[in-house]
Length: 488
Image 1 (cartoon, one colour):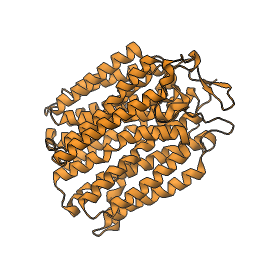
Image 2 (cartoon, one colour):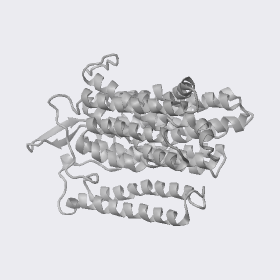
Image 3 (cartoon, one colour):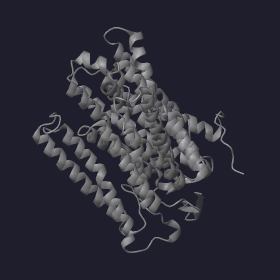
Image 4 (spheres, one colour):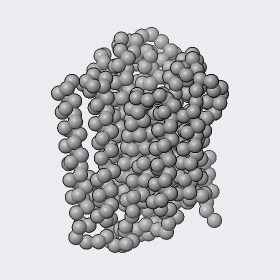
C-alpha cells in the first residue's frame, strides 16, 4: 500500500520538500519584488510609461535562457549547490537594484534578476530525487504551488514594509530586506539539505551542453523544439526595437537578432555533437525514452504557465477598462487569480498521482479550453462576480495543469530531470511573452479565445501522442551496473 504523505512532518523527505518550496518561494519573492513598488519607483525616477514597460519586459527576458542553462548545471552539479548559489546571487543583484541611481542601472539589474526565476528548475530535480513516482505529482505540486506564492507575498508585504520604514528611501529598505532574506536562506539551504537520500546515487548526464536523445527522429524534434525559445527572445527584441517600444537603436536591434541566431546555431551544433553516437549505434531499448513526451509537456506548460503570466499582467487593467472599477478594487479582484496556486497546482499533482499523468492532463486541458472560451464571451453587461468566478475557474484548471505537467517531468529521465524541467519551464515564459504580444494586437475577448484555441490544439496532441509513463527507466551506476527506477 502506498505511503501517505505526511505534510506536517519536518523530517526526512518532508524536510527537503518544505525547505525547497520555501527556497523557491524566496526566489520568486525576489524576482517579483519590484512589481508592488513600481508606483513609487516610477515617481522617484520620473519614469515614463514606456520605461516602466521596459523594466517589466526585462524582468522576464533572461529567465528563458537561464532555465535552460540552470537545467544543465543542476543535472551536473546538484540542486543543493545550485539553489544556494542562485539565492545568494539573487540577493546581490537585488541589492544592486535597490541602490540604483538611474533608469539604466534599474534596467540592467532587472534584466539580471530574471536569473532568479530559474530557481524553479532546481527544485524540480531535488523533489524528484526524494519522492517516489507514486507521490511525485503531489510533492511537485506542493513545491510549485506554494513556492509560486512568493510573488503574491511580495505584493502583499513590501508596500506595507516600505511604508513602515518611511521616508524617500523606504522602498529601498523594503527591497534590501528581501535581499538579506535571500542571501541568508541561500547559506542555510546549503547546509540544511542533501541532493539525494542517504545511499542513493545522483545520476548525471554523460555529456554536458545538451540533452541526450535516443533516436534520429527525436534529434530532429529536439532541434525544432529549441527554435521557439530563441524565437521568443527575438520577439522580445522586436518589442523593444524602433518598430515597437523604440527603446533599442536600429544597430543594437540588428546585433541582437544576429546574436540570437548565432547562439541557436551554436546550440544546434552542440545538440548534434552530444548525440552524434546515435548515427553509428542504436541505443539499447532499456535506455530509450520518447522525446515527444518532452515536446508535448513543453507545449502544455506554454499554455498553463504562459496563460498565468499573461493574466496576472493584464487582469487589473481588464477589470478597470471593462467594468470601470477603481484601481484598488480591480487589483483586489485580479489578486485572487494567483492565490489559486496554493490549492490548484498541488491539486493537479494529486489528480495526476491518483488518475494517471495522461488522463489528468486531458481532464484539466478540457477544462482550460471550456473556461477560456466562456471568458472570451465576457462583456460589460456581465456581472463582475460572474466574471471573477469564471476567471478563478480558468485559474483552477490552468494552474492544476501546471501541477500535472511537472508531475510527469521527473519521470522521463532521472539523470536529465533538470534539463527537461529547464526546457519545459522556459516554454512557460515563452507562452507568457507570446500571449502578451498577442494581447497588444487584439481585444481581451479575442485574447482569451486564442488561449482557449491553443489549449484545444495541445489537448488534441496530448490525446493522440502522449504516452503514460509505465514500468521502469534504467540508469547506469558508476561501477557500470544498471539500476531500474519505477515511474508508474
